[in-house]
Length: 158
Image (cartoon, rainbow, N blue to C red; front, side, top):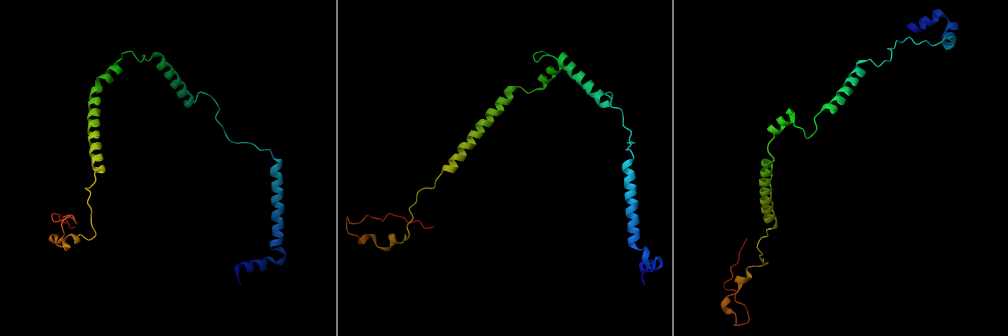
């Protein structure tokens, strides 16, 4: 006999699943009802909502810095040490114009060469189906004026 059956036999048939289920239902509904009658108390602790947190402090400092920069920054036409340094390290515009012009000339030459190669066509060749016809008959057996002389024709074979 299994262990579960042995335990059921000891308890007896009257106190099986039916009574325990009723007891569970009654206990859960009673606890459930008590829960609704109690007031809900929030036990979480929240920090006070103030504007002196590090985020707002950094935001205020950044705003003051931006306003000061725009107020005291030099005008676009003014000379300042940063602008002088940048202009001294820059490559003159003439150098870039020369490089661009050389590139333009090279690109135009390549374009012309490409167009020449693409548009090139092989010489026109009339290919006959049976080129041996030219050599089939003797050119000396033709009457004068009836046929064209083909004696100097050279047949090209592939």
